[in-house]
Image (cartoon, rainbow, N blue to C red; front, top):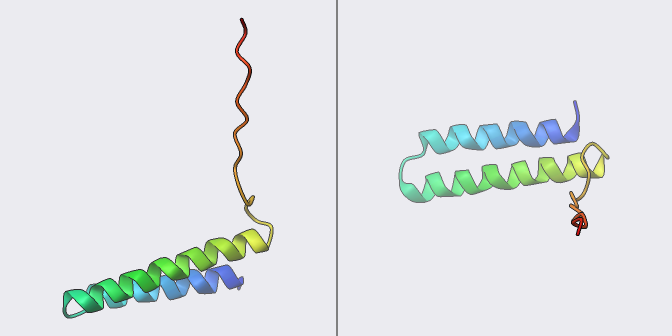
Length: 64
């Protein structure tokens, strides 16, 4: 299993905990943790060369 998949599993676990959380502070905390795990998964995909680091759009010159 890839490291990024493990991170995504952790994010899913945090989302499940958020759904069962009692109170707004706990819900927000678990939701933020899920977001952080997803960001780590995306960064790991980038480090593994699976996604490009940045999409650059080069403007085309308009014909006169």
